[in-house]
Image (cartoon, rainbow, N blue to C red; front, side, top):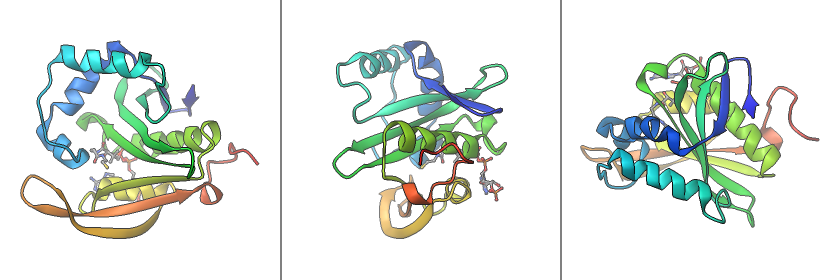
Length: 185
Ligand SMILES: CC(C)(COP(=O)(O)OP(=O)(O)OC[C@H]1O[C@@H](n2cnc3c(N)ncnc32)[C@H](O)[C@@H]1OP(=O)(O)O)[C@@H](O)C(=O)NCCC(=O)NCCS
């Protein structure tokens, strides 16, 4: 799978429902990460959703999710995904959420770098995009550390629990991508 000496990305399975449920049932994380209304879901509903996502015939065509775990002992750290995969334009968006306990240890940077390796090398993408609240310093610095360029700001774009926050847009082009020598010619 996709790994370095600290972090591995592996496919999601229905057994990861507890991890997904823990991440997405935290209202504060949800407000930072999602652009949709918060509707609490049962563990069974999360499991059914993962089952559907991983088994439907075109699974992976537009959306691919990974569990982020430690390489050393497979401790689950969070999830990351490429979504909105657009083959015609060669682009996709990315999302990433680590458990609170896993944040701030460099795992996000490692996981983002591996997700770019998957996107550029295995999906032959030309461009990977991400959007995040302008106030999300952690995601912004992680993106910049992986070579993403800040391309602009959408003013008062998304509800943040109190009002409408500005959204920072980032992009990384294949030709700008530097993954430490693993990228194809
Ligand atoms: C955003 C997130 C994925 C980053 O992963 P992480 O493992 O915490 O980040 P890292 O430890 O790899 O840090 C990467 C860089 O960001 C900086 N950083 C990380 N969290 C930070 C924070 N809260 N405030 C300021 N800087 C921060 C680090 O100092 C590092 O900077 P450097 O390159 O100058 O050394 C993670 O914090 C997270 O899951 N946050 C909650 C969900 C979220 O916001 N997801 C993104 C939604 S679009």
